[in-house]
Length: 190
Image: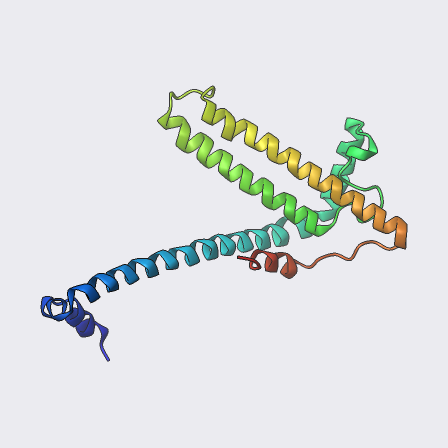
């Protein structure tokens, strides 16, 4: 069956004129509602697919091959800064940081960088006065990354505390969450 003749028949004036006026308005309303529903479904699906691909690529190409280097340099940086133990995000016991925490940090910081760079510097700055002192540029380009780094740091500190507490209670490290479980979290919920 060819859809082009059927679509032509449905859109032809004689078909529309033979349809009762009240029914035609109802069909138009139904079509508009279905388009809105499709948009509500496609938007989150596209965002979750993009986030899943990003998370997979970061895990496979950055975290897994360089995990020990990341932990070693993080511990070295903590020691150089002289941070008290309560503010350190890398534990001294192995593993220094869970893979899930690294994925969370990479995901949040990556999205923050994307928002800051794309919106703050490429969209707002040319359309505004063209200065770095514009409030939108300052907010999106400087304040947003600082706040995101602080939030990620707080998350990593709290995660480290729960891992160390579990290690002291049981004598075993917390089991690592797999990548597919982390990606599956994107697809749960509304």
